[in-house]
Length: 440
Ligand SMILES: [Zn+2]
Image (cartoon, rainbow, N blue to C red):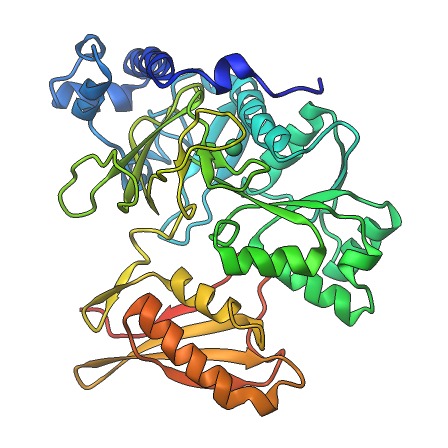
């Protein structure tokens, strides 16, 4: 199949789209209530029955779920998922788990139908990003228990693309293989997209000149929607870079189209609500940050209904030239409610620091932020690398860094300049932010 442009679905007038969402929400709620003891308990305790949802606003009466609730039941029957499982165990065909960066990993079950549905939703993204059945894609991903680029792989196949699984090859071998086979696109984390380009250059391969990659879909961490980071990736590869967001529990709920005007929420498959972090009030106006509460409509084995994802997002006021009526988010996923820490009494999103660093051309791609406590004062150290040959510009770089950081984050930093290539490099997700303050 070579068309995932569905004007009937993707350009529905707002009101009709909301009717569709209401209908799908009611269906999944009823499914979970009838088939999952976990959800039935949760709703009965809240005095809620599926029939209570009559209009879209009623959805707010439905209790939210979060990761810790799934951790509490997993390991029990039906093993290992616990009674959130809403299908007989023998219908489960896929196992994945979260990376466990915020605690014990959460298990995720899918039936074949769920898995195929996830790929189907992802196909709309790939098509909107210009992928076609003439593409040959390289997937530089360690195929394992984490969901990461599995869906990219399956969706690309479903769309008719040719897929080269880059599994256990190391970075050098992956680059040589994509050169040998003239791969036209790939999916990877922003960290790895930048890291691969650096490795290629060390091998004497200039990606825009010597490779054929012209579109890259990035996921797994912020970057694709951050202008300075995106520009670095696009320049390094001579390719268009599109942001894609999703997680193990939810699926791939948002993506950029070729116009790169923001992140479209795939509203035919997912319901995204944004909630004020402090008051819990639902935010429907643009340009106000909050955390995402999300519902996946069509995943039945382990339903995801009003999941408190803790992703920080905001609606955009723009509409997209592509004609899709799926709403846009401004700035992609801006971080997680857990990582946005208070330093010197100011809310700090680590991605804002990365954007400042990558907007200064004399600096390398890598950086590290370390927060410590001296007496009762917080101190932030920012470690950066000057590109080779830029040593003479250190004073000018320093003054721009200080100014831009002050404007973007309202904070002062201790700056450390490190030799090019000496800060840690990461293969998948980075850990560039270190909070070493004693826990209270
Ligand atoms: Zn668009």
